[in-house]
Length: 352
Image (tube, rainbow, N blue to C red; front, side, top):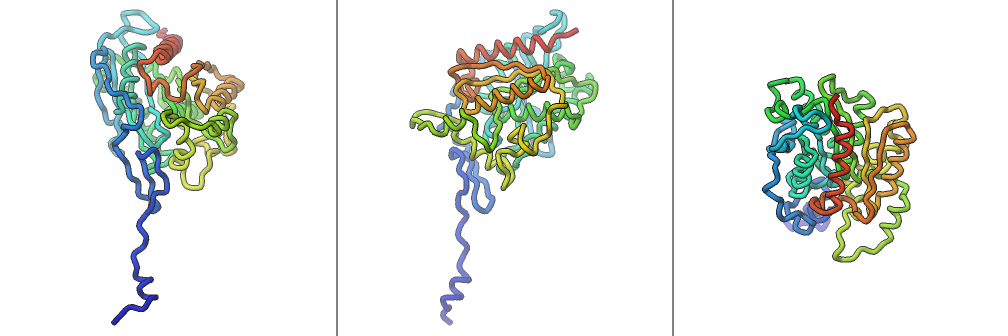
């Protein structure tokens, strides 16, 4: 019996899902919620060769078995003390969170790997470069919760004494811990510091955070700053790489549907954000890149922390763009950044 037009329409297959968001061809969000990820990063400025002769060892460690999350641990092979007597072989522990707009990247990226090698060898320090769950599969606050898990793992290591990971037991000083992150990782570092200061995250007496390093943090806000508006109005040359052009899209993918860039995860001073006036911060070093479209927002962040009575420093790198240490980890500006980080770690990582 032939089908009527009405029955033919009602029995037709639904249209296939279509792409709702396409982030640099790396992450695609489809209309049915499916996420496609590509491993092809060839169009990004990925470091081709990471020096293999740096005096640093590294290994991967699981810190959250439930979510299959790992961190990469680095330690210098030639251990020198920092901020104390030469006989003290214990080193500061630097917990590092990578950038990527909460949507892309990993500690395995050659650029992040190279940067962590430099930090471990040149500070020197034990560096823990942590991965975290990415959006849009895992929207915020998933990444912030994973940071809590990193510190819970580190707390357990400190409590384990001689039973801790051998590298940490041998040369990690749990009383001199620094939180560090770039871009989205800088956002994570801020929120970790807030949770510590507010008491939402407790580390006990064995683990002590003595400083926070926030590199070109990835913050947002519905109201554009002057530098953001300027960057949006400027035409981009076809050969120019500007990670900032994807910032709005990454916020749409990282925040829950319907949330705005004034969400507390994005805007530390948004209308619904936790008031920070009574939240004590450890000493903070903030790095601002002069060509970063978020430079005004970063400057405001520093000004407001300072006005609240916190110990905060601003290191400005004129002529540099967002993520310069990531994209050129062995460049001259990165050399200067390492010196600035080392100075800060020496100052606040001194032993008594």
